[in-house]
Length: 107
Image (cartoon, rainbow, N blue to C red; front, side, top):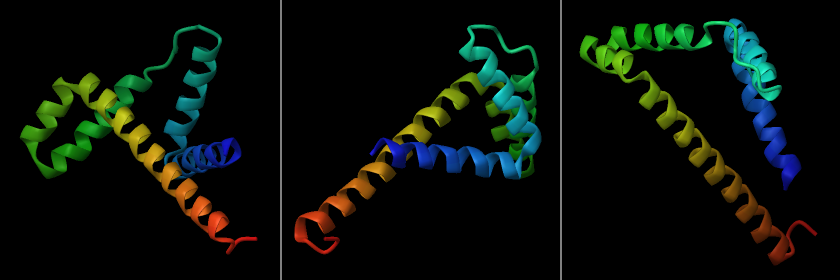
């Protein structure tokens, strides 16, 4: 079970790193610094805020203004949403595997 969860996390991180290599490098740098209890020394937070705001500006300027002002809330909400979606995905995979094992199809 843990290997599947780790594999899913690695796939997500690698796919994000492949699509946005600058953000991937900055994310890994900050994660390494946070793991040794040191603060992040680059402005990753400002880069992410600017990118998200510019993406929202293409859709609606009012939404972009709200996202820019409440970026902390939006980022916490998106992390919680990601964890919930990942948990549901893993739980569904476990249920499918459990069904096939209990009915004897995978044996």
